[in-house]
Image 1 (tube, rainbow over the protein chains, first blue to last red):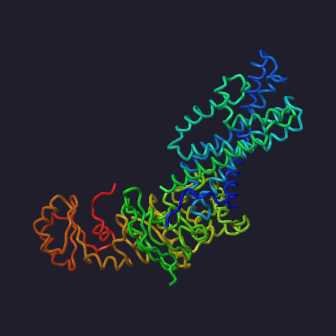
Image 2: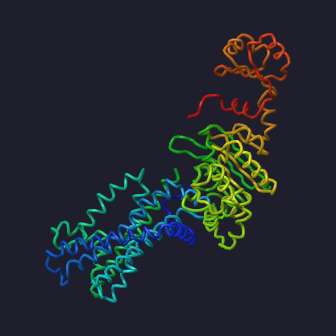
Image 3: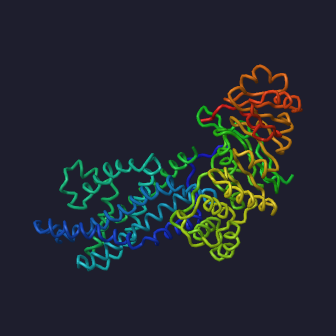
Length: 261
Length: 304
């Protein structure tokens, strides 16, 4: 009786205990984790926002630092989910063999991958909250619609966790992750409008940018911070969720293949 | 039949390499069954097949009346596993490890808490309840892994080389605990390459090599079926030379391994009398044991 690794994932509530396990570990080092979530975006926003922003005119009617805020919130949430899915996920799968322990119980690999994605998205949510707090405290947004950043952060987390797990499933070691950060994440940051508007790019690169998930996240975040309903928001949500579902399925197939050896 | 576990013609290949080659197995309730074999014999792969973690290329498998791997999840609700390599959660204390693991079985926190004192006592870890895993000794970690495998009060417990890497004191404590489990009616399936462990613990054994079971029975039966009852081991520089000349006259079978000679005999007296004449040959006379059977069946070459 051969099991087909391409069957669609089966959802069960058994992923919840795994999410709780990761949360329990996180609680033990919550202080340093929260500090990290806060420090990185604050340094970026203050440094680039005031430093670089002092030399720049307004962008689309807002100050440069307010423009940067929308990019930073997406960039931070993307990074949180990516680091969790790659480094921490790999540690749990490979180094600590936590997955092996879990797989000996009535929990399946489908549940584990699902839990990893929801956990990484939860870290994104936290990171999004931290940046939003900074944005509010700096007075960069007074928009009630900015509260929508909270669910958006979770969705960006789902998207980049799913994509990141594909890399984890293929990785022979931690060193491999450098390729992903150098060849995927860094170009994405530069192409998707974190630091400058996408329309500054040549047309070809604008086309590339339009299919990258971070672009769609930023197209949602930036209007929300200035109290506008994002144009084409259904499309942007569909793209982010599409990446999340495709990444979930593909990473699951790759994990099934890897762990059946 | 109250077979807790049965496998028929189980087969698993990785590429061209046949790892499990037509394996048949039947384990009864309350039995301690040992799977013996050199490294690479296919023991761990067999365990992974039996748990439904990998799917066989051919064959049928039932565990606790569930077809595996199709209904492996339902079967694993009543199974506990002690893996070969420790995979405890290093960030957690002893008690937290048990709590978190119990949740994977769908147990409520209150249910797990209620079982904790008994589990900790069984593992001799009551006063280590709040110790973090990295501070535990190797023996303590193994006992915690054993306690973790019991958190769901399983009917069947799989143990993959449960005492590898432990000192004698720690091994004896594990053995005592495993005997207590069989006394409580639990079914145990363990793999090992320690023959004394198999001989002490197992009601029934199967010797595995190259993916096949090459002999099966109680420890006594295996010895009686496969080998002469007495062994005279000789050591020293001249032992091999002497054996090449004379051993065939006194022993049904003999093997030379480096500077040691193993003579397998039904009646050791003539050989022992002869050895009195050769005081330069040191020797040891003992009954045949499982290790002799194992080496006869699987050969003396190294497996790497």
